[in-house]
Length: 58
Image (tube, rainbow, N blue to C red; front, side):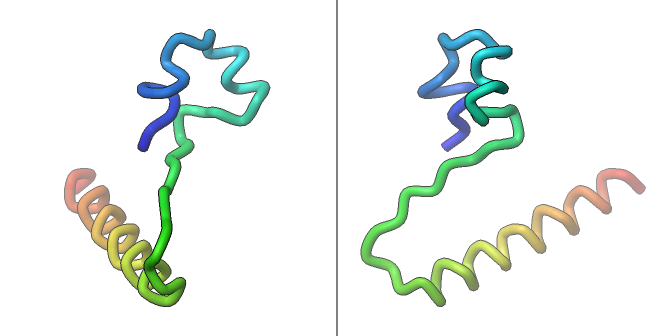
């Protein structure tokens, strides 16, 4: 979830920034997954996002 555009969208940007809810913040809801699975999935997602950003910049 992207709090700045969802749960905190009605809060002024300066107030969000002061409280740490910045534009770059994402929130993860986790529950029953094994921590190793979450770490592996996040690592894979971040690597793909980085590769996509590099391709877009070329």
